[in-house]
Amino acid sequence: MSVRRLAEDQFQPAGFSFNEQNAVWAEATIAKYPEGRQQSAVIPLLMRAQEQDGWVTRAAIEFVAEKLSMPYIRVLEVATFYTQFQLKPVGTRAHVQVCGTTPCMLRGAEDLIKVCKSKIHAEPFELNADGTLSWEEVECQGACVNAPMVMIFKDSYEDLTPTQLEHIIDRFEAGRGSDITPGPQVDRVYSAPAGGLTSLTEADAKPAAKAKAVPAEAVSVPPANAAKPVTAAEETNAALKTPADGKSATPGGEAVKPARKSAKPASDEMKAVVSETAAADAAGKAPKAAAAAQPSLDDKNRPAAVEKPATPDDLKMISGVGPKIEGILNGLGIYTFAQVAGWKKAEREWVDGYLKFAGRIERDDWVKQAKALAKGGEAEYIKVFGKKPR
View 1 (tube, helix red, strand yellow):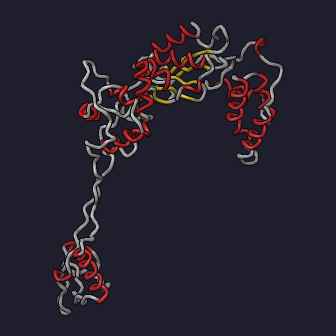
View 2 (spheres, rainbow, N blue to C red):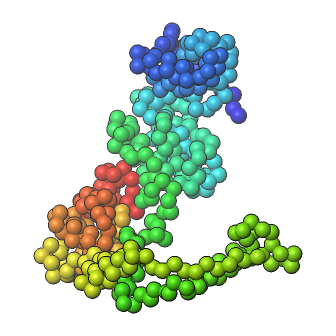
View 3 (tube, rainbow, N blue to C red):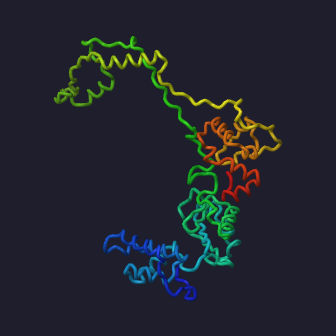
């Protein structure tokens, strides 16, 4: 590990204290620990000091030490050991931590570092001209399957390309970092497979078919003295378990089977249930699994079709549209982003029902995606959504 020292005196402020809100938070945090163990709050308090001032100052270290009745050197050891603590001023709007461990390096971390050098500063930990941005290379940040990635303050931005990182840095420099959605910058949910699911893709599982009710006249009620049939499972259990009378198995190793009991005659209650079921079946009232009717192709709400253009739009760029869905849409005469962008509510509901998506078109906001793609392609999509289309 490299040597980590506090910033030079010229950068150090004269004092430090938590603001009113953080002071209340600090007292509540310290109270979480048992009496005599309050020093365990040192890392949370240092982190909150860093969030308040942007970095950990000497004055903040001394303040936390006094707050927790710790020697200064003990708190200094913590602050200089953990690289999450910044010991000199960093960018006021963004400090970009680029993961340089093997998975990210294999997936293009070096190109991300080049972006930081060109857009922020040639050297790590140095501020840009306005003092708003800085960067550093760090070790693994725990999102290897989403490599390459960066961390900016508490948020990670994953599955990055150099172009996307440039866009992210520009947004933070403009004070619009909140426009960027943290997490994967491709069409995946957290660490789900890139490119979409390959299994469990059906929207609705078909319910198991219910057994048809048996008419009362077809039910054979055994006579009172009839022996109850023994199932194979019961025979197996009888061979493995101690007999019901509590006696041990015979010396030969075979369990003593209890005498079979006579089957009881069907009760009046059971007969009544069977009769009711048969009556319901005869009346055509037996419950059946009703499949949802697919919208008619002649429905007035079906979106208007167009002739296939010479160069159809790549509808797969819309999150939620894969090759199979694109083929279905093309079969309906839908080839362009402009068509999808113009769908009204009734048309969206028709397509959603036709695809059996159960509201997925609204959840994924196909119309907003299509409008961005129709207006300016990938560049406009990144501008609107802060990430590259799939």
